Amino acid sequence: MASSEHSSREPAFDLGTFTRGLAHELANPLNALAMNAEVARLLIERNDGQRAKERLAALIADCSRCGRLLHGIRRFGAGMSLAKTEPEPTTVAALVSAASAQLKRHEPSPAVELHDADATVVVDRIALQRVFEELLRNSVEAGASRVRIDVSRPGPATRIDCSDDGAGIAPAVHDKIFEPFFSTRRNDGNAGLGLTLVQELVRANGGTLDVLPGSERGTCVRIELPDERGQGAQP
Image 1 (cartoon, rainbow, N blue to C red):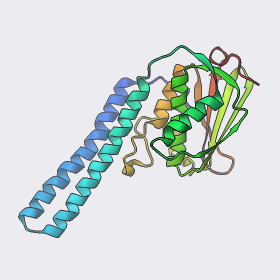
Image 2: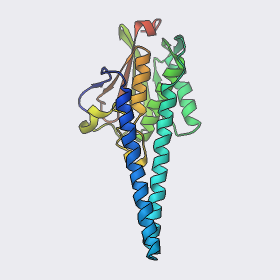
Image 3: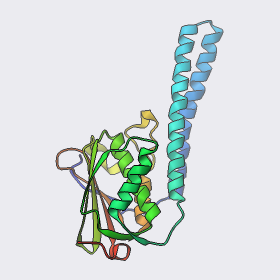
Image 4: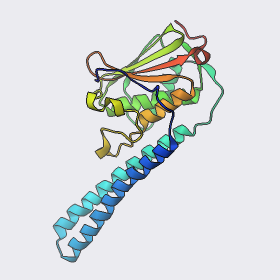
């Protein structure tokens, strides 16, 4: 895990930067697809069937990576376009439970350990449920089997710490984790948009998102929601 805190207290989402990044991300695999298709065609013309099969296998793998990338982009778009609902009282436990159940419908979900999660927060319930769904997904993708969620109110905010036992974040890439399309699992077709979406949904609820050093390994993501979005939170 990185040795320093990284925070979402940065300029808001920039659509122009995002669009340029999206064009770049799509251009790379499309170029690879075109190259492998052309090479496979030439090899077939030369009756080099074995090498042509290898190129076709690479082409199929590139198609699969493109599919996963596009799925991640669609998921990001769906999250960013969530209908804004009026803040309503709910508990962190209810949000996490709903997020975990939703994730389990399609993907693995880690075991979740809740502490003081019956605290009440007043938030856009749909958006915050999606926040926890993305955080649990990120933990699984980082190899975590367990996530601990601690809720407290040390000051004028409701603090939610989500700590996992996954691979953690290397110090060399720690400053890039909130950048759209940044991913250490790029070869697997990971879109690198999970934390970007979480950051924007937390901001929409007036909160902040930080990534803190873990005690041993793994990652700790801290969400803080201010009083106007967390009135009634339990200490």
